[in-house]
Each structure stands twice: as structure tokens, then as C-alpha cells.
Length: 129
Image (cartoon, rainbow, N blue to C red; front, side, top):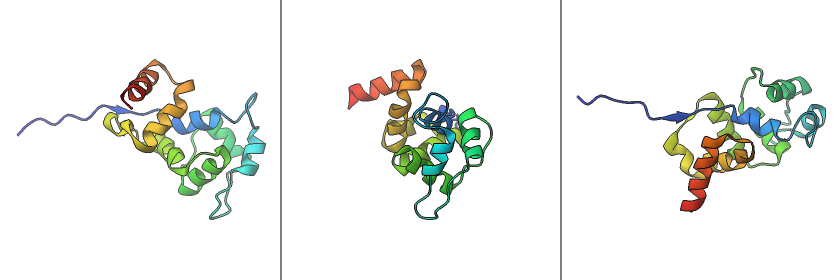
């Protein structure tokens, strides 16, 4: 029986990075302003200022479908991109999964704040596109 190897994965605090890029001191919105606009349109639920503060500061927080929807509204991003960020932060992706769709869009969106490895991946995808 052949030996199985785990596929290389990439995991990073993508949801935190995504929110942190727009929210917090010196950013587009304060945590209070963001909490006021980040509301799940289907349920009317939104994270409180303290939850947004936890996300921005990199503390532990619970990822729920409502949180993903609310953050997408607050950030003005498609829900599937924010969901990809939540997936990357909590579970990670096999490297092959990052080549297209929402995960690839997420990586490109984070590229401005990303490290050299992620930038190199994004540049390769752009060259292949």
C-alpha cells in the first residue's frame, strides 16, 4: 500500500487581516463605526464593538455564518471572499485550492499586506491568467 502524504497547506489569519486592513486606529473606520454598518442583511445581526475589537487585535473569536455575512457587508466584499478568509483562518487550504475562485480572489485582495510567499503565488497566477 502506498504511503500517503498530506498535501501542503496554507493557513493564516486571513479574516483578521481582511478586517484589520479597513478597521481600527488610522484606518477607514473605527471599530464602533464598523460594528454599526456590519450587519447581516438576512438576520439583522451584527457583531458588537468588542467582537470587532477582538478580530482586529487578533484575539480569539467565534466564526459563525452570521459573522461572515455581517463582515462581508461591513467590508463591502462578496460573502464568498469573506467566507474563504474565515476558512483559511480556521481550517486552512490545500495549496491547490488557492488557484481559483474565492480563495484566489482572497489571496489577491490580501496581497498588499501579504508576505513574499503569498505575493509570489499571486504574481504567478496573474502571469498564468
